[in-house]
Amino acid sequence: MRKDRYILAVESSCDETSVAVIKNDTELLSNIIASQVESHKRFGGVVPEVASRHHVEVITTCFQDALSEAGLRACDLDAVAVTYGPGLVGALLVGLSAAKAFAWANHLPLIPVNHMAGHLMAARVEKELSYPLLALLVSGGHTELVYVEHEGDYKIVGETRDDAVGEAYDKVGRIMGLTYPAGREIDQLAHQGVDRYDFPRAMLKENNLDFSFSGLKSAFINLHHNASQKGEELSKEDLAASFQAAVLDILMAKTKKALKDYPVKTLVVAGGVAANQGLRERLAQEITDVDAVIPPLRLCGDNAGMIALAAAIEYKQANVAPLSLNAKPSLTFERLD
Ligand code: KG4
Ligand code: ZN
Image 1 (cartoon, rainbow, N blue to C red):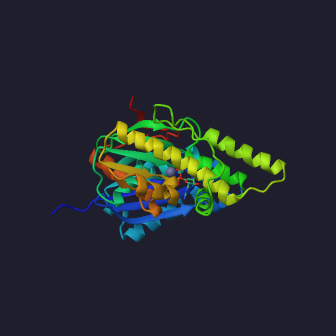
Image 2: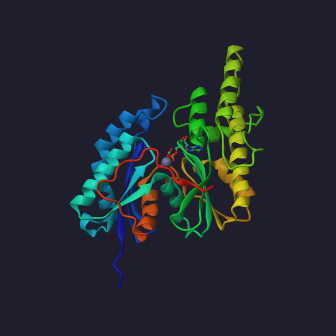
Image 3: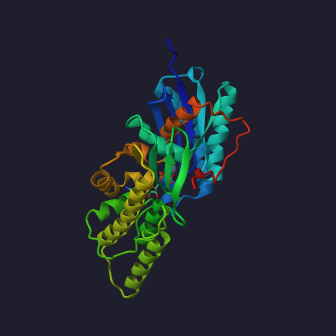
């Protein structure tokens, strides 16, 4: 009888410290997430130095909790996986150092995982993915369309030229006086408002799969600024609805074009912004001829469970890193041209 396989995974690329354990490549036994969001709220965004310090404070406890919730000891594990990029360098280094020390002390192989592969592979908890697949990855730091011909082979076919979608949500939210991160609240407000401000939808006429959100952000800032100079109060609901309508029109148009350019069996939509209810509604209505898979809400934001789900693929492909592995803050998939 084949022995069960257990991988422990570590994530610390931004403001969540997380450790998870996966059994036999698919079953998450634990996924401990220590969020620092309360500490960063008062600054309106993540402060890198504060993030690193919080990671140091809680990472050991996260390891212990992930193992005890899984009902395992270190000697039961087969490998340790860790996010080594992209992300904040100081934050990445905390998880990476802890994972390396743990791997060395317990004689376990170290599996390097790209954070964006983690977001994408979170979809594996929903069902076994069929290839080739296309993924729309939307988070606080990234907006990209990724073509995956077969397991583990990630290629960028389109990406943002300026802001990431989540970043645009958070900046616009700050202008509206909402707390960080603002994506969820804007999504809720948008459902109560009307798209009346006709914000720009950039790059829709261009024959490529790239995105741009900085013009939309500027249009929003200008409208808000001009109104407040005149002492006019704009409806938060309508602002949110107009902003979200523009974002979703852009995401949907580029995703549909990508599906035409790259016929695939599966569309994965993942990353923090994949929690967006408006996006989920539009995907359900408009993507009908390909199987669309979105990870459950609990696996959309940063967590080590998704890193474990991606690590299982790397482990099968014998992708093991030396203990000299360093953090790569700007790690990116190759572009397919
Ligand atoms: O993937 P994630 O947790 O962290 C990064 O890797 O960046 O994404 C966080 C981003 C934040 O910008 C947050 O505002 C956004 O995801 N977000 C949302 C929603 N929930 C979270 N954006 C739009 N609608 C939501 N419901
Ligand atoms: Zn992320």
